[in-house]
Length: 485
Length: 95
Image (tube, rainbow over all chains, first blue to last red; front, side):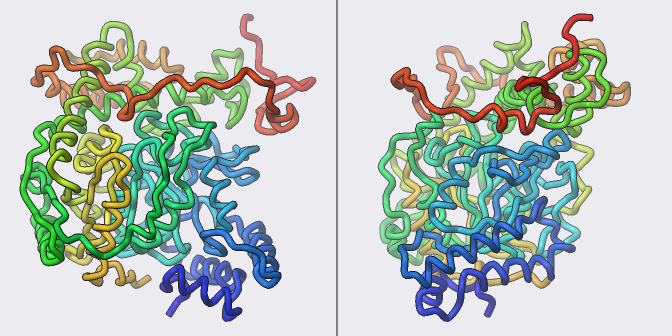
């Protein structure tokens, strides 16, 4: 059995009794990368030299009997929009192809403090805009279950690397589904925490009111451990919440007796693949068997979420991406004739089509004469969507449905139609608009490709969605299946 | 409402993007499709509904106005495309 298939506790036991070393774990990571990375292409940068030095230092501490961090010795991959000191951070954009941050994102610093070992930086859609990883300026990532299919996105590299066994776990970011949708497509666990639970300091901003960093892991227990390590208030992020951080691992009791589950009819209706629906209803039966109560409800404004989201997220993106001007960092275009030319040429040469499209949409929606009709209207619809959730949560503990309407699609099949691509996120976007947490867990396969079950919780109630997901996982085997590469 | 090539050019100049003729055509078509899709929001009555800018209530974060260390100039300049005398260098603003 590969080391990465062991539970975190078992790995720590083996480290403690000297059966394995951190160097062994890091070796396993790079060995696996050597075997499968040509097919998967999950990474943009491998950081082998530093990883090996870090492993050696941790091994020394281990044999010296010094205290160990929560994630001691575990190899992790980090999405390439999270800045890492001294390691190129590109956001999968030509514009930042030479950008070497001089500081660490708070989450990167926390991983270091927890003694995790960073293996490298993971591929994504450029600036996290996309749902297939086809928008990476460097290369696409391939779904480990079938390399003719997309891994999803934008955290496609993170999901694929975990599914392929290249790293023990990974960090992604989720603005409209970018952790949960690729987790669903690649058959791994993806958690988007409550907005503000995890610091965004050092996460290159796409849509600041929606972005949130979270874990992609093989199972729910690992997700709880990783969340434990990264959650918490950060004075460097003014939107960071001052909330008490509970014991997430301790919340995994396996007991969901009496849990009240709401299934929104809009999440299991028209437009959702019948095979996906079957897998979700089968999962709900498992949860019922464990003592949960399942009832159908309505989130009536679901159908408006995608339209509101694209106006809001693109507007925020057009403002956030104004910083990429070719002056202070990034690639400056050659031979500009004046300062305006630096802006125009650097941006036009540095950004890919999807990024330009969203900047254009956002600039239009915010421009004089259109602000009320688009941006303000979308903000009001956001309120209605948020209220939908609040009303359901008055009577239920969690909301459950599919993570995505379909399983992964073939590479190239949706690239000509941005709107169709946007609709893949219809079941994940409302959660970001409401700022609440949600987790995607594997709940079966349709035609050989993984299906994800989405469990949505109340704000700051990660414990309940983790507990529900974990209880489900204990009674199914889906998360134990591995792709043949 | 339909976006014209002229409007695409105007928005591109606001966004500091230089588009090719082909990109202008393509974006005009795609932006029209996306905005047409967004028109469904008009079906909703939002009279009296407060806009949500952030999902969680935010308040201003205050701190003492104390001097704290910042990044050294050499480090800040490490990523600058061009520099001179400890400053970031750009071409002339006015010709």
